[in-house]
Length: 177
Image 1 (tube, rainbow, N blue to C red):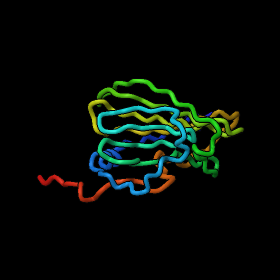
Image 2 (image 1 turned 135 degrees about the vertical axis):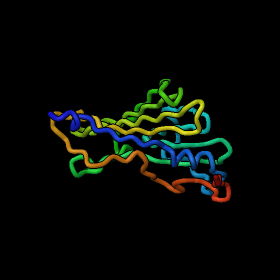
Image 3 (image 1 turned 180 degrees about the horizontal axis):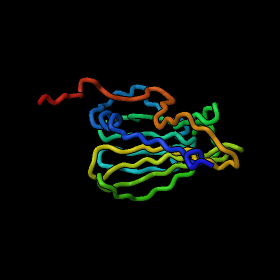
Image 4 (image 1 turned 120 degrees about the vertical axis):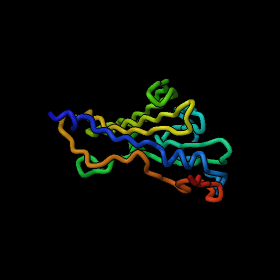
């Protein structure tokens, strides 16, 4: 069986999110907590942001000086012409660890969405750097079934509730050369 079909991954360097994290200002007027925010199943902190995982599997990015959530999202994949959303899975487990790569060191939060019979698992890995103001989001489709699957797309950022991104345009400054 083709190894690609067993595990298909998609990475998203969160440059755009880092811009939002660093330039955002308090603009979340809803004051709403992330869906399922009755508890937190995992969290990590980086230089300029933090990530929490709610019991329903959604992740929320926050940053110092910004009231409320900057980005609230789940992850999803199109597998065998069916959309698999992390929030539809009955079980979400989070494991925190440390990492070091060419960009520096930081914390990793790996969230496994599992428990749908006959359906591959979704694994979302979030990394925040200690010395960088940005992070990374990686999503894998892990084939736990006994058949081949076809993955047509993976979305690491799939905003699920408003406001999707909180920021204040007046705080964005463009540096001219």
